[in-house]
Length: 147
Image 1 (tube, helix red, strand yellow):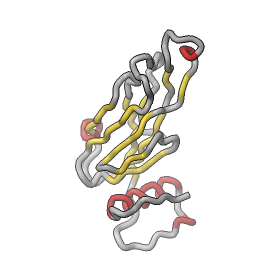
Image 2 (cartoon, helix red, strand yellow; image 1 turned 45 degrees about the vertical axis):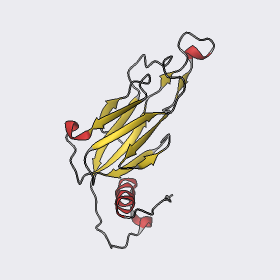
Image 3 (cartoon, one colour; image 1 turned 90 degrees about the vertical axis):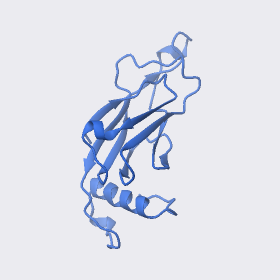
């Protein structure tokens, strides 16, 4: 998936991003993908040359994905702030020398309304993400997932 890249400094404990600054609005269904890598333990051999995959959580309206290594979806039904929480420790020795560490955010069309039966077997990946975001946002007891 492509989308709008938002850099996350791996030395920050967290970052709250107002997605409206990037053209997203309340009511949008967005796909969020963790991208890039960071260097941990700068100046502490042998780890200072290793690159690590994304090591953060994304949280919107208390729907949190822990270390997403895949694309996740959110229905922006309560504002447009998305929080990225750094789960690495310690963080003061991290670096992102090539500036590729962060998330991409892409608006995806929601094809389904509440109460409509969804046949997941015939959906594209993007359509599945949109449907899951609607389910999560409208069912406070939702804790499962889909494959």
